[in-house]
Amino acid sequence: RREALSQARRATTDRKGRSAVTKLKRAASAAASVRILIDTGTLLNTLTLGAPGNLFRYIQDGVRFGVSGQAQHRSGKITLGRLATLHSTGAGNLPKREILVRPERLSSSTIIGMRRDVVALFTAIGKKVRFQ
Image 1: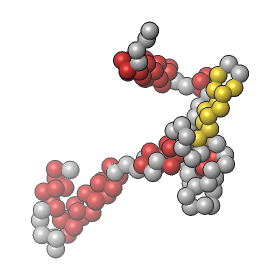
Image 2: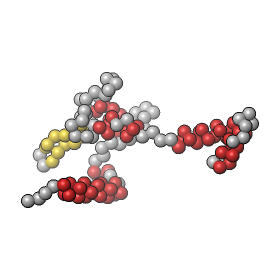
Image 3: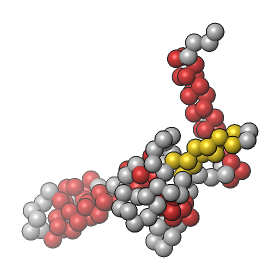
Image 4: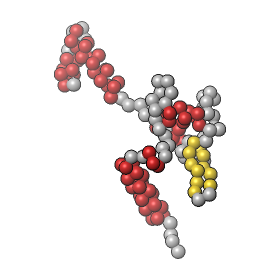
């Protein structure tokens, strides 16, 4: 990169300078990251209680939580449930981005991170709640 920067500083009429600028642009675009599931917030919001597309039901011995299939995407062309399915399974040029995974398929590092998050959450809640 250092060499490319020094070459880019040369006059743009210089063939090596133009080549270096092109390489820098390619490197910059490759380094840029698009996290579509996070950046748009559409599917992330479906995992927020009360948000469109969120599923939260009490069931025997627990709760059912996830993405409901009924709410429409803002484009009106697809439901949020279908969109989540397409991302989770991958389709065409769309890479597989699993959203909700059964516990038995989680890696040990993911489970450790989730436990750490739960402990932090309950610690924060405990500081705000008075027990009598």
